Image (cartoon, rainbow, N blue to C red):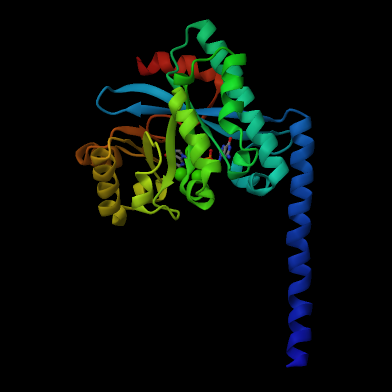
Amino acid sequence: AKEAGRNRSIVFEPAMRTELERRVELLRDVRAAVAANEFTLFYQPVVDIRERRVVGFEALMRWIHPEQGVLTPGHFMAAFEDQELSLRLGDLAFEQSLRQMRAWLDQGVEFGRIAVNISAAQFRSGRLAEEVQERLARWNVPCARLTIEVTENVYMGWGSDLVSGNISRLHAAGVMIALDDFGTGYASLANLRQFPIDRLKIDKSFVQNAEDEAIVKAVITLGASMGMKVVAEGVEDPDQLAALIRYGCDQIQGYHFGKPMPAEEVAGFLERFGA
Ligand code: C2E
Ligand code: CA
Ligand code: CA
Ligand code: CA
């Protein structure tokens, strides 16, 4: 047994150390990249099915890497799990999206609402609602232009006043609240009633898996019965779209209508879409 234990440690240690080293290296690179302004937001359209118009965009973080090009969050997930970095990226997302909204408002670009993703760490200060309202005021952007997307786990994991209080204050101010990745986390149905949720987002893993049809239908029915609009994410083809329309889904986000794009392409996209 001792022999096996020693062998195991010989086999696994280098691999573990490599993973840890990679993580440390990634976090260091991300820190430098934040300082070098290499992070930016791309915007993906959300389309209202019945009105056939763009109702808004989700702001999604991208790292414009000098050598590797445009990197999606999958390449730097560890940064969102790091307390300090996720706060800095969260800050950056609010600041950039608000500056962008201000610019679009000034240019008369009808972007609808912009949805910003929030991570758990951003609730730690206990003042998220006030911070967001201060920023909105500073950029002179109406609260009604902003949606915040919170995952079930952030919602439920903190449960307490810290999250629900801040969410409620934002909602009362007119910021729209979307529950992200619905069905993939730990939310219980009873909890849904306790929070002011305006939108349920069905995760793309359900939308793209034909075997999950019953789940998708159930979420749409549930959302409708609770007065929430339901957004299906990850819609790539006309068949998925047709099925969602049949089930009575309200809004669609997916490559079928548009991939996440740089801010400069948004006005042109809206024109082509005929909004
Ligand atoms: P999410 O919030 O669930 O965002 C939706 C993801 O689905 C995005 O991935 C989007 O590009 C992708 N998507 C949308 N439509 C389609 C489609 O038709 N096909 C496929 N294959 N994918 C589609 P992305 O941009 O890679 O972001 C991944 C995740 O990273 C996001 O998932 C979100 O959890 C996180 N994230 C992105 N930006 C931020 C941010 O600013 N702050 C925080 N906290 N998290 C962020
Ligand atoms: Ca999201
Ligand atoms: Ca997510
Ligand atoms: Ca998702």
